[in-house]
Image (cartoon, rainbow, N blue to C red; front, side):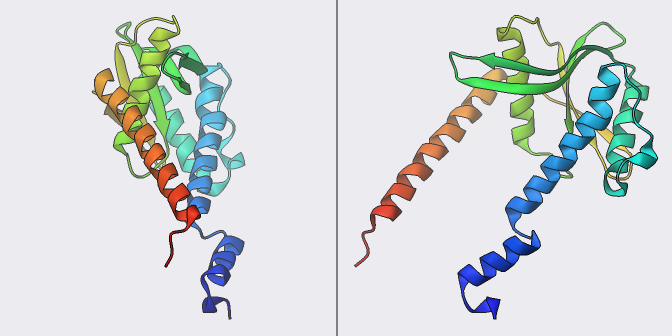
Amino acid sequence: SFLRDAEGIAEALAGAGLRWQDTRDQAADRGTRAHVLALEALAAGRPVPDFEGIPEGERGYAQAVAGWWLDTEPTPVHSELVVADLELGLAGRLDLVYLDGNGHTVLGDLKTSSYISSKFAAQSALYAYCYEQSGYGHIDRIELVQARDDGTYRRIDVQCPIEDALAAVECYRASGRVAGQLRRALKEGGER
């Protein structure tokens, strides 16, 4: 009976947790837990919790983070640090800034998504820019660390000029303005 109208379908999907927003939120929660249970703990010098205590569907992500940590042997500089450029209206919480074995300052951004989007590269470049603008120093290199559910990880070097990242922000903001104008126009009607 719920298939008779759009509202019934929407309610059924929402009740079952099957909307695209639910999938997005579940992925965000999974990523947050991987950050807190593994990356943040390691950066603070705490041991990663016993993997058996981590929910089965998330255990592989924590194992991937731990594997990356053991292979990389980073010296943490900052973890879960909020950085900003108030003039541009940009702020965010970066995952990790560390020194690598060669003494280079690296911004590491953990991702638990199976799809690596160009927005992740722009986001991490903006973190590096805001880190410098906030007075913390220069970032020599940026890497995404893609943790996978099977316990493996992949490093992805990010080469995103700040001009491109700032242009992406402006496109995002312009898209929001266009969408807002369209929503207002649709709300005002115009039906005949």
